[in-house]
Image (cartoon, rainbow, N blue to C red; front, side, top):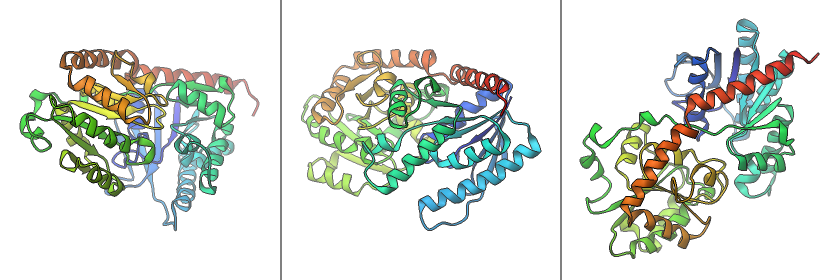
Length: 395
């Protein structure tokens, strides 16, 4: 089977979770015997064409734009043009697979021109990110999401929560939506014995301090401010000495001011963006991962922590309670509730045997529910079903 994939981010260009998703899913589909051509955006010194673990990666230039939405239009024109060229020269293709609304226009155009079924993966919705549609920019994005799911033969989402959201928010029939979880390559995480872990750890905290960390975007929906509000309650526990590490790029000045005003600045470290190899080592030496999201379709960061054998504390929003099973593979707390979050963190820090038990269960769950070979087979099943249905249609 030949599949053309459209994704606006792919390593080394990493903006959110889509880059990792496509980079780890499609090598497994290549192993299953499928030919994957992936169109993405040029980035730095990355070659315009290369093969990455069997994926044929085509990077396209995007004309300069006066704002983000103009840039997205230019990207779709470039992707559509190059996609048409590939489909003419390398075709026929069986599936076009678009990841999120940003590449929707190119995916829809290629679908109609070549009469090839379009599959859409919706990683999040504008409605969910903002708890509603409140302005013209959000209405524009919401409209693009509607166009994409309407034109898609099937829609893939990452959790049962997202299935309900896409059905409700984007008026998509329940039986048009497939749930396939995100996955993780657990084997890529180092262990303490693989590097000088103690010296590395001392870059972030004293030996007697427990490292509590958040990694991700600094947007409101990620709930970092809730973690900072919970920190004083954790620090008041005299039997535990903690250090809070906030990892991620973006606008952090308001969070730094919050830490200062709470009187916990000396117990916080804002690292900015951290490269993956460095982050993998950091997670290995940490004591507790916290993801206090206000909106979270899935929570792949929780899987990263599972793989690194770090106990996880999350909020009960979105897909997180599906990923993290409360009191079995992690601790689930009430969303936007600093007291509940502080309780969850202390449950982990004060009970090392319990924390280890959670970590062991979580690591087993990775293989059972979140391994990419298993998820690739589920994706292949969707592809095969769509190709069979397409063969019965006089388009």
